[in-house]
Image (cartoon, rainbow, N blue to C red; front, side, top):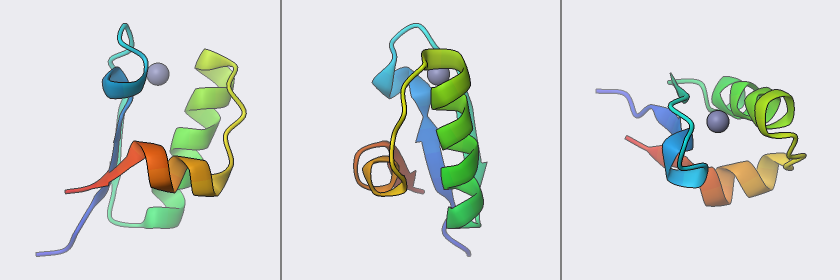
Length: 57
Ligand SMILES: [Zn+2]
């Protein structure tokens, strides 16, 4: 089984149901980053996303 990288936005922003999941970490980071920027107007670095938001499932 391959690990997937997952961002569950509900954990970060309690009223948001956005979830991104990908086996490709780079893709998960990109999708999470654009979601955070477009929806929450938060500019997060790749490292911040990886360390604070992405889970390995
Ligand atoms: Zn969100």
